[in-house]
Length: 69
Image (tube, rainbow, N blue to C red; front, side, top):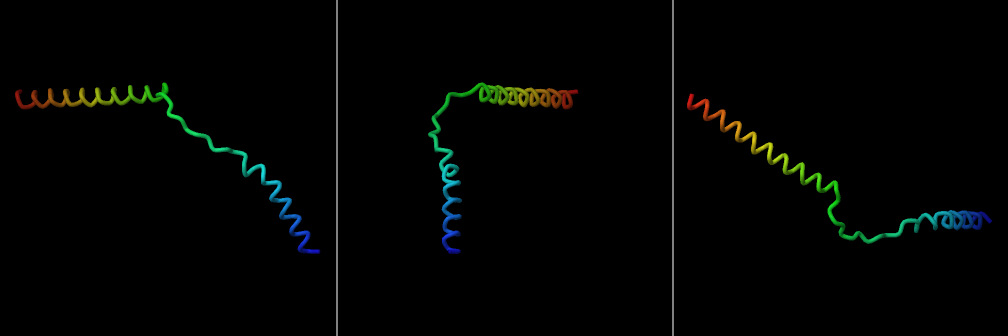
């Protein structure tokens, strides 16, 4: 009798969870074109490169003033 009740409870628990086990089906991830966000990332990279270049120019100008003046 005790084994039967345990078996029924376990079967019921499995039935209740059966829907949750297959709730999410795997989907294929397709290659997507660049989004607006990724374009903004590229713009940020370019602006950082510009800033670095400007910094180098300023440092170079200051060094030449220091040694020439």
